[in-house]
Amino acid sequence: MSRDLFASDAPQALAAATFMLAGFALAQQDILWRDIQAILRRSPLRHMQTPGGFTMSVAMSNCGPLGWVSDRKGYRYSPTDPLTDQPWPAMPPAMQQLATEAAALCGFDGFLPDACLINRYAPGTRMSLHQDKNEVDYSAPIVSVSLGVSAVFQLGGMQRSDKTSRISLQHGDVLVWGDEDRLRFHGVLPIKPQQHPLTGEDRINLTFRKAG
Ligand code: MD3
Ligand code: FE
Image (cartoon, rainbow, N blue to C red; front, side, top):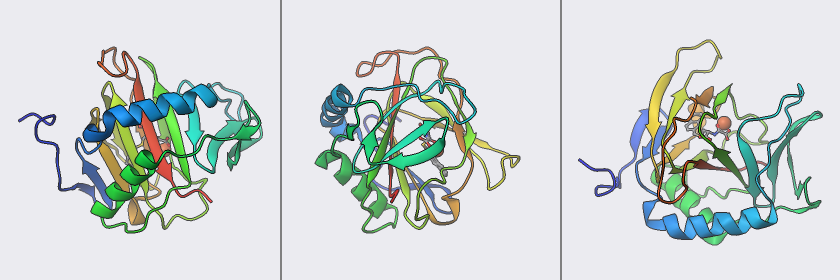
């Protein structure tokens, strides 16, 4: 059974409040890709510094009123792009609507993200286990959209040492998580060399958040 031909309309529960909408972004892929390129022309992808002085292997940018940033001073949300000293590019309506609709299908009505972090994974890039906890209000869910080459996502528990399960994320998949799963540890295993017609060798992940 091909997920390209049978994109899900019903969310699949991966945990109590973590849901997979397989292929949910496929119908919007062209407009999403065009919107992402326009954002990245104004606020380019860059490798941020961690507070400990390492360079992140995932390249990042943002759109929306707030953007996630990391530097020697710490992790936080900022209304301006430190690279340009300008506000982050606006969140395109198609992106915001996709996130709001996905959240509603999973029981989170009225989700209005004010930040969208754009992650680019080149081959070999990984994201180690972490929690998303720089947002002010943990009652809002997070919505993630995967584009391009596939990844293996690690879903852990509330402690870093909890056992993790592995979930394959394909082009067009949307994940929604909130409530008791909002602070689960999670990560992405190193991306295997692959090619995708839309993105080449890269994986792009969008995460929509209510940050402020
Ligand atoms: C967390 N991004 O940007 S999102 C991040 O694929 C980040 O780029 C990853 O973690 C990425 O902070 C993963 C997917 C995700 C899905 C379900 C979760 C994260 C989750 C469930 C609980 C907690
Ligand atoms: Fe995260």
